[in-house]
Image 1 (cartoon, rainbow, N blue to C red):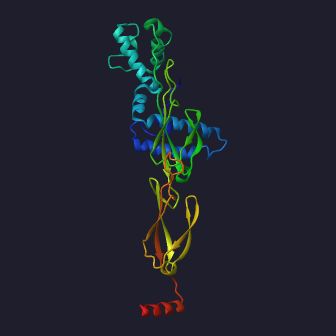
Image 2: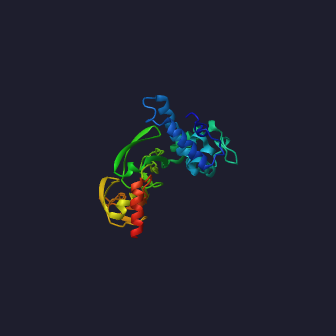
Length: 299
């Protein structure tokens, strides 16, 4: 396997912080995203490389293994186990591959791994050593409206397309596990898992707090004083509100069941809370000013 410099792919130094890694990944992911570069094979390849680099470097444990073992980072546990096994067996034939410090040269990794877990392995130990595949981590960026309903989406992870179902109501920062879609197991071992973290942006006029939604709507002075009907937008359509006479500024009303869907609870929703912001009339005509003066005298 050719060495892949994940730091170079993301354009960061080896001393980059987690925040710098995340920032670099998001910037490049937006730039090379397939939706923004349709039918662009170069951009598609670059996007896959960026995701692969992020999966490794954004995970502290994976990053530590990568820094130590390079392109063989997924087999770090196997190397360590093999080294310990060989030391116990007292075999000196392969000891030239490492020093007491445990440092390997890149060219030695593949040969060493093959000798310990390939054809020579069975003759040495008489049994197969199975290792679980590496877990993968990915970030999926969605808008709030995308998670209002359950839907399916195809992800590309390590050059593989994975079709997943995204339940309605997932929250920003939530992590879900897709079993068996991580790295391939070694010597017949089980595959690792895929962990997807959701990064949800909100471009709507609603503020979300778990299952509840909050919004502020303008209410003109006349309707606030006299009452009436007002049509507003909710997440799933329009509704009519009955405004009570003499409604005060800052009054909050609740629309039951008009909030956000509850995660994995089909048909259950939170509530929508509406706060009225009364707007005073501007640019009054002379007649309007006269009428307001007469009203003030009556009060």
